[in-house]
Length: 303
Image 1: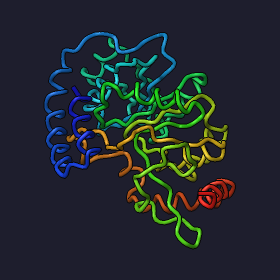
Image 2 (image 1 turned 60 degrees about the horizontal axis):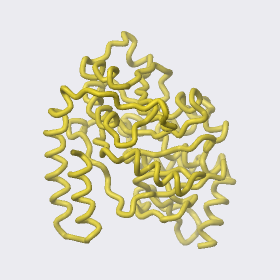
Image 3 (image 1 turned 120 degrees about the vertical axis):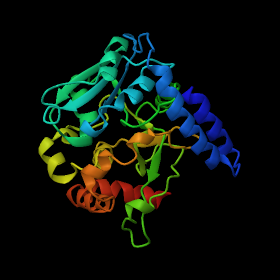
Image 4 (image 1 turned 60 degrees about the vertical axis):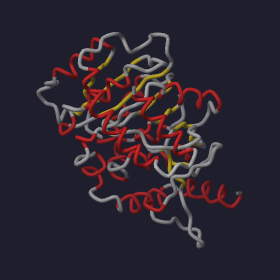
């Protein structure tokens, strides 16, 4: 269902039809209405013990009653994952009470685990430590993932096995003086080949191959001190530090449909306060890890 509504819009965008944005809004509403109804009584296992992919996501109290919708979309993939794990902060769910709609998804393959509160970093931190030999796909908690989502990321991984693979990205931008332009001005157009300057954005899912992050990436002290409010920028910095590039596998990038009831809340709001803080965080990371800046600048000069 989701793939049909999403791909119909993407095809119009690719064909440069002026009315694709209107259809995007209409189809988003249709998916928001129809998909949850169809999933209420859905059964059947959504995982595969032979798979080498694990999907990992996190949420927080304001979204605990709606995240079941996103999880449902991840449990009906054409290419099934080995596990779908939802990470919850022990500090936020001290009573460990889970909504019935979410609890029911355990029968279809969902695992719910409790961990320390590292904000959005929870989606990758513990799962990579527990399953170092698996490909980890991170997901956001307010998205309808098309049924071919995992399959598309896996195809991108097959073509670029050493790269981080995504479906949505920004292009890290430089000004004429060699500094960075503001984060909000980074282009959504990404290179079609692996690049240091392609920043994977979590909403459309990101595939991380085994060993793509250095040990430095898992320093709780540094995460909390330098980048607690943004996992995307921290991970980008760590990837470049480990000499790993990123590729956007989507020919016509288009943001997935989001759950409309979550529009007024978001991890990025509670974590960063204002998006402008991304510039401060990125600037500080470049000061701490100058080799990352040098690799980005060299790639830019070589273009």
